Length: 452
Length: 81
Ligand SMILES: Cc1ncc(COP(=O)(O)O)c(C=O)c1O
Image (cartoon, rainbow over all chains, first blue to last red; front, side, top):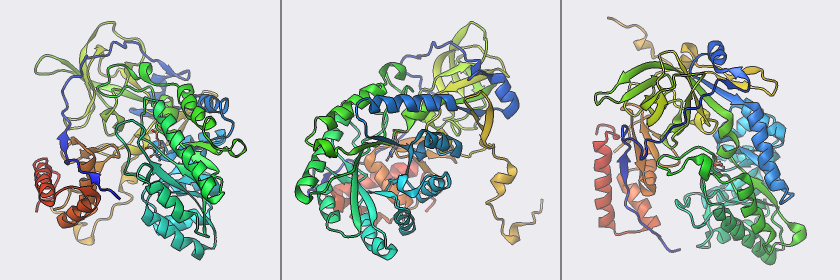
């Protein structure tokens, strides 16, 4: 195999305090209620900051996505991408809607099982599957998406010991014309590695090749990349049928649909640039329908959509701690939401709005979080109304990746509340406290006493 | 050479050092090397692994790595040696 071209390793510090190109903002709308509950009431009842998830919005978005695909291609199955938001209540909403589970670790696998998902409706992705994980997956008849040859060999060794056939797919990376190319996961299409993997799997008596998987990246703004991906997967389906007389049961196109959040440095807001579910569905299903796959053996289309399904359903509520003037005279607002809770603020310019009616004047403002560190910037240089200490703010579209990638740092992580379809609120994850934080810590005997 | 503990690395090449509050972007090769460091791989093992995978002269690679490691040191991402 030809070796890859080497690219020099680079690390760059991300500088806080550099204003974005346009000092864009001017969204001086406000939000007073979420699903008809007052923001002030939510904060009074559950504290600040507070994550709020709208069950209604989750279901509506999910149904919109399903219908965009089902109307074009009947054999559709979504699998909820656990890492995007694995709070059990959130997962259960998706499972009630009929979504399977897509997991990338033993931990997520156990979570899915505990949420009641039968093993044969779990897709197991990722490069990190221990022998214990694989044993669990094979025993539960999960669909194992093989990432590399070492994993393949482990499965070949394990399956006969367990006495069950391993149901597998391979993850395939490929050139779909977009950058960056996610080529560190799975087997490469263009250089023939994927075909080699298929040829190793097919003769194995204890492995059943069920599907082909790809996940071409995340926040993908060009639906055509999916057309290319679907085309390439379809060509392998045809080739496998020719050589082995074996029908692939499903093609999994992964996740990656953009949400309406605005990427940092983007010229236009995400609400303008984000393709619709219809755009993505058309790109994928047209490629499948026009492929050479035999009509009566069309594979089921799996989707592992994450952020595009959940981002809009999540809100983060917070409170103004202080107004400050910076040394150069710019205004800054300090709020109780830090980057530890809003991890996605590192790549999105999140939309933040005041809760309730506010002062009509706005000023060029930088919004900081409460952490004692310089990078704790929620928004740089936006036009924002002048708020007072104690006023409340709402950050929109935080449903994806924050409630899984948040960092416990300096403070406790806050309550997460779900508002159900009848407008009733439920805590779905309690805020941390001193006891929960200390539960896992152990102090050696000789350090128990201190002398001051 | 050991990466400082607690450093958070995201799939997209974002690195966060909670002890200083600094954050960084890594390109793909940078990510790969930091990952190997975080797995406790030695400098020699990293060189071997890169030479196996990529088309690059050993001494060019060594130069790039020295420079990259000195950046990691400068950014305080390495445990005191
Ligand atoms: C294998 C796999 N599937 C699905 C997803 C969900 O992606 P997204 O949130 O971009 O839809 C991811 C996220 O990176 C992933 O790695």
